[in-house]
Image (cartoon, rainbow, N blue to C red; front, side, top):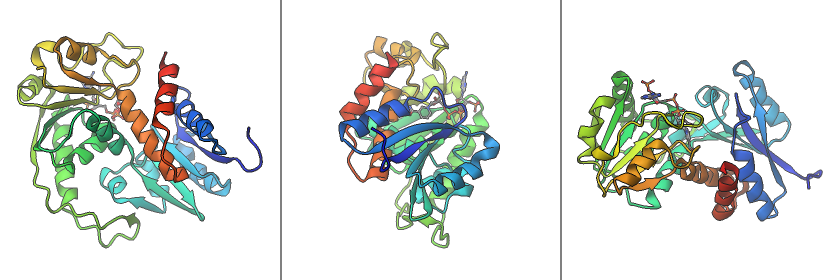
Length: 301
Ligand code: NAP
């Protein structure tokens, strides 16, 4: 029941009607009897600044941030986590004592989804795509002790520039920036074996890959019969294939992976684990993962 003491969290984006997050978070709050409610807010590009100021004024406790605001919102935040700064995007805000704190939990969500089935240490990882989601995931993979990180993309220059950004930013000195939290993170030990290429060279990189992460929207509802980025003939049974598209759960790419006896990870897991991180940031309580996952599965049905 909503009452005078209910704390409000939510998501800002445009469009927002398709969001699975209200279902996931409200199920979690209900199961733990926390007096919170999660609300979707449709915020147009030009209204971002006033929306953040308004959220502060209304004593909203936290917000998720989605397309098209993830990058622009950095200008509106008082302090952000070092990873959000590296990635250059914020997907979670916490409001506390009149200040806003920005985080990027997409990156942690994706890596946690993979770590559920395999360690990342010493693995050869291939990421397809170089957009917003790829950027968050690639940064987190880069600091996860992998052996090799390869990024392939339709526009090869974007793959190249993403790798360039990762390399330069990991070696940058943040100590002068008062807006960044958690600057004690030390990336100096990271000595990455990087590679990049066009999407047409994916089959070559897959020969020695342990993990393939597809961050393109290919196969996303309603385009469920799109041509996947690769097929079963170029996969091997030891490969782990993670498609971050979560609707449908079994995408065209994951169907190919199943044919090749590879291990599959649905995009629903990334959504779930980034949600679990947000839940903890806002409430200070561990998220009820199973409840949240069941709520997502019910919704997708
Ligand atoms: P984005 O910034 O627009 O990037 C899309 C990337 O996919 C670009 O690198 C683009 O290549 C590539 N691409 C698009 N269409 C392609 C095609 N037909 N063939 C080959 N490459 C293609 O999008 P985003 O924000 O990264 O999101 C990507 C997908 O991830 C969306 O489906 C989104 O729903 C999903 N997502 C899932 C989660 C989760 O929690 N599971 C979280 C975030 C995003 P070019 O550079 O050549 O244009």
